[in-house]
Amino acid sequence: MIEAVQTNDRQLQSDTHWNSDGELEVLTFDLHGETFALEATMVQEILDLLPETMVPGAMPFVGSVINFRGKVIPLADIRLAFGMEAAETTIDSRIIVIELDLQGEPTLVGLRTDKVNEVTTLAKTSSEAPPSVGMRWRPDYINCLVKRGGQFIILPNLQAIFSFRKET
Image 1 (cartoon, rainbow, N blue to C red):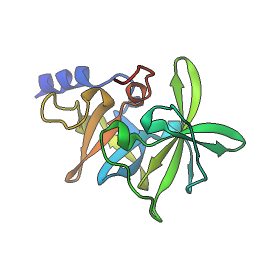
Image 2 (image 1 turned 120 degrees about the vertical axis):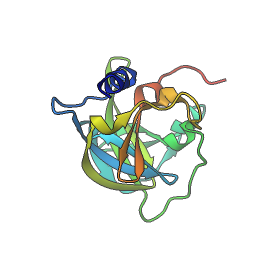
Image 3 (image 1 turned 30 degrees about the horizontal axis):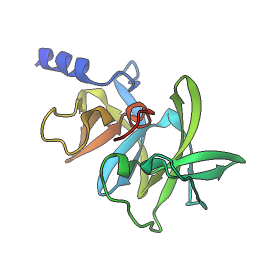
């Protein structure tokens, strides 16, 4: 059993920052019926929906920008990066503004969500790398899956999702 946990640790993506107790404080949110989580330290603010300006020629899942405290920031719908269909906004829809280190620069990005749930703590012992087969999403887009209760919480690999390689 101990050997399996050690192997599991090596397979997890390195950009998830578990604390010394093997815990991670996260903000959970829903996209297309799935629960995702972001490290709480990267979250700057949770906003109601704002007016968007479309950006011609942008990556499909980052097709618009918003005004956040006087700054123009990209608004991403990572549903599209995961191959999910775009969804209509609801009364529960929110924008999570995060700060990412992209190409060595701190960058603000808004993420469109169906619903923001809670800030909670996840245990590393309940996490595992995404399976290499049977996933409907690109495995490099997922840092890990964390089992909590009867569900899995997905920690996305935002560095991979927002990499600037051209899509064919």
